[in-house]
Image (cartoon, rainbow, N blue to C red; front, side, top):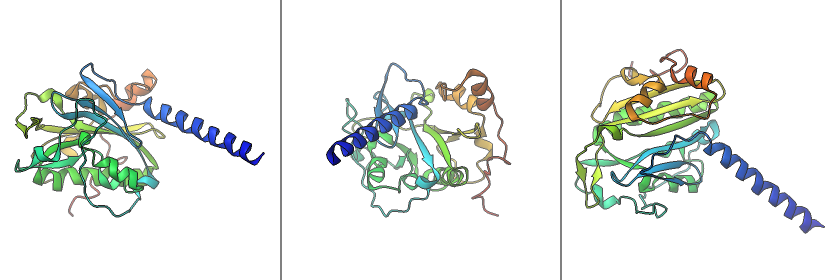
Length: 254
């Protein structure tokens, strides 16, 4: 009898997890014909082989996840889930660019598996050193702080591939993006904000690069949060930047 009850409980857990995963995947951006979608445990991505880059990475970030502080050692790993193979760390050697995580490590420090996944090369893109260290890190820190404050966010990030053609680095000819985007949606308050930032900005506030999500869609050619009812999607994606809702100045120097 005990084994029977345990079997039933185990089956319920599996079904619940599958339902949660299905609901999570419902809000992912629409996929282009040239892209390959890969689902990892804590995020999904669309890989564009011609550029050796993700078109987008998407994940849910809760306050509990954002508060994780497990220790880690950077270890970039080839993603064997990409059917055509991802770029490799060797592509970045002596290139003058850093391997930028589009799934930030500080959002994944709640579990060892999440940390490992954040270093898959399928979610990595070349960024200029100073841009990565100052501007991109500031934006990542902002999103992490917003998740702690709001409780739950849906995040999509990636390079602006419509800017092609690009310079390339490494044996695999990894494209070097000119701009990066990030869109953030609060599914409880139905509020959203987007950013598009050139891959050379190193100082100043992020406010000049904040914009409605619809503007990011126009720049990238992607369709975000299409699962929303049309009237809600229209309102959310056209919402202008409002610093009273999104404290963008949190990490600006006084």
